[in-house]
Image (cartoon, rainbow, N blue to C red; front, top):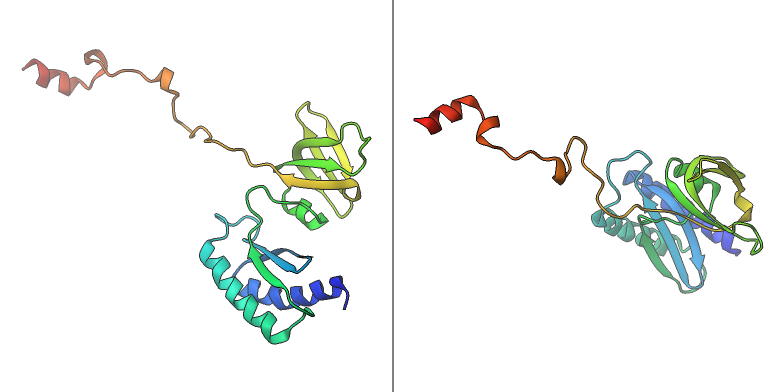
Length: 186
């Protein structure tokens, strides 16, 4: 049985389980003796996948794969989430991440530049369009991509409506509530 047929059979078994748990099958891949099933919350969901959801999905998927046995020989099942900085391997991955910052390394070692980073503004079955920091757009063929991933911005973002520490006013007797001034005077 070919690897793609095995992956297709695993996908057919995993997809209904993921749907019942209100999750998406982000990716399924086989690397040697490991079958990795990557699950995620649907696009636009509040929050990410929880450890409880992954644990339940692992038990259900493992039971289904043991029952149907779609893969010949011994293998290790790994059920995971795509993480904050997720790998982009398929056109569907690129389409799902439109609006996010991504980084791409091209296959051609002589490409100039070989590494590109920017906001993913559009993606289809063949190309991804990035808005670079200098304001230019770059269209990249997905077939030319060696590696790509989303870029997570680490660190806190300023909260809306909050003043910076340097602009806060100290409360003095002159800008306090008048009723408090009267109580202090008496």
